[in-house]
Amino acid sequence: MTDPYFSEYGPRPRTSETISATFNGFDLDSEIPLNDDLERKVRRAAETGSPFVRVRDLFPH
Image (cartoon, rainbow, N blue to C red):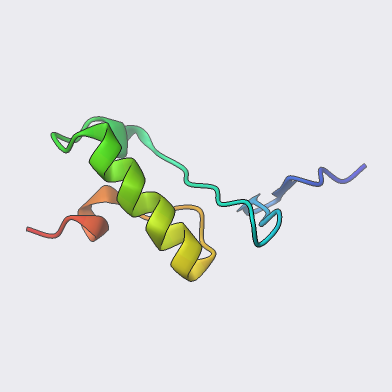
């Protein structure tokens, strides 16, 4: 049976109206406030369709 929400590579896109953003341990361990991180992750996910982007790519130093 195939999982409708996950492929062998990760989450499947659901619809154009649903935006998923994922986190890993490094994202949650950063000094960036979670709401700022989440806002940028959701925006990038909406722009690219990819549910994961690293915090260090969203907030370059």
